[in-house]
Structures are given as structure tokens and as C-alpha cells.
Image 1 (spheres, rainbow, N blue to C red):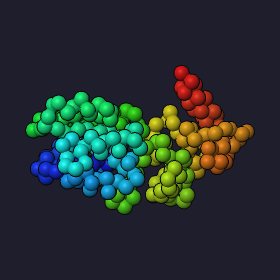
Image 2: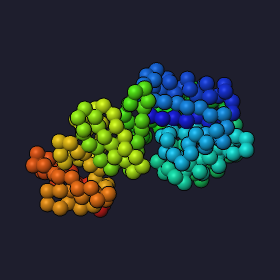
Image 3: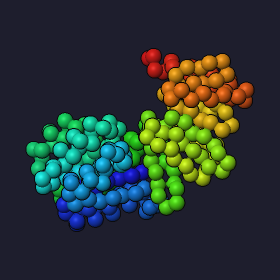
Image 4: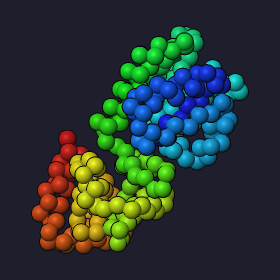
Length: 238
């Protein structure tokens, strides 16, 4: 899980960091949390990667570029990001709904309430199961399902073909299948798991992805693939 805090008050950043750590029970290997003292600093770090973080905690009353302006920029490119505002003024809360804010927190922070809001955000992401996380070295990567086209096993590595690039890390497809939401992903081959959102058509014993990649459906997975893909199509038609 990748979290960004943007506030021009170092004490507030430190306080939020401690609360986030409590939410993860001190297991720092489960998340990364980056802090920024200005909107400009955050936007510079993001570049064109508005989905770099899954949760943004933004002070509304930042100088030059406000938290609302930052949220508007993020929301134009990332509909899934959770945005939580921090403000000293109740009257600004209404504007927060224009960018589909998840929640807002009033300064000074109520620690227990803040913790509950953050835990709800984490639960929301977990229920949706819209994020796949993997670790490479000391860095934790988080990808939205909509970014992932397929997983491929190459020797002892898992290769993730995403919309923007290819990622590799040491792991197995068995581990992938144990954590992804099976309403979206299905294994078709000992070496391939595909995101059904990217299936363009099924041609006999091959699945053809929207990227025009052809992947064989082996006999071992043919029945389970057909059942999973049928359920996926029916769910979309409801």
C-alpha cells in the first residue's frame, strides 16, 4: 500500500504518520508512506503517475496550490485513488465532495476518529481487492487491477505485463492466485494468468487479448477458464 501525506505542518505529518503506523500494527513492510510539505512538491514527485499512491491525505489549505486543486488533478487521471482531506474549516468540506473525497478530518485531529477513517479506507480497498502488491528488494509496488494485463511465470520470476510497462519479481503464479480477486483473474496455462477485462475473444483453445497476444488454454485449465469467463461476462451484463 502506498500512501502520500501533503501538509505544510511537520507536526501534522508526524502525527498522521504515527496513526498510519498504528493502523498497520507497526508492520512497515506492508506499506510505504511519503510526506510532502507543499502541493508543488507532491505534483513534481507524481509527474504523470497519478496512480502512484492508493491513498492521499491532503491539507486543503496549502499555499499556492491548494489540496482541492491537487485532488482535482489527481482525480482526472485516477478514479480509484482514495482522497482524504484535512482542514481547520468546516465550511470547506462541501467543496471536498466535488472531487469524490473519501472523508475529511478536522484539525486538531481526533486520533481515534482519524484511525477509524484510515482503517475504513484500508478495508474499502481490501473489499474491492482492486490492488495487487508485490515486493522487489526493499520496495513495495502496488498496481490497480485495471493496469494489469497478465501474469507470466518465467523460471523463478513472475512477469507482470501492465499497460505502461513490464514488472518482474521473484515469486510463483500459485502465490498470485492466492491473493488476486478470482472474479477478474483466471489461470489459462501453467505459465499464464490473464485479466479477463483484457480478453478480446476466445478462439478454440486460445485466448486472444486486446493487446493481440495469443495465449494457449491448456487442457488442465480449460474447464475452469470457461466457467470463470462465463461468470465474468454474466456479471458484466447484470
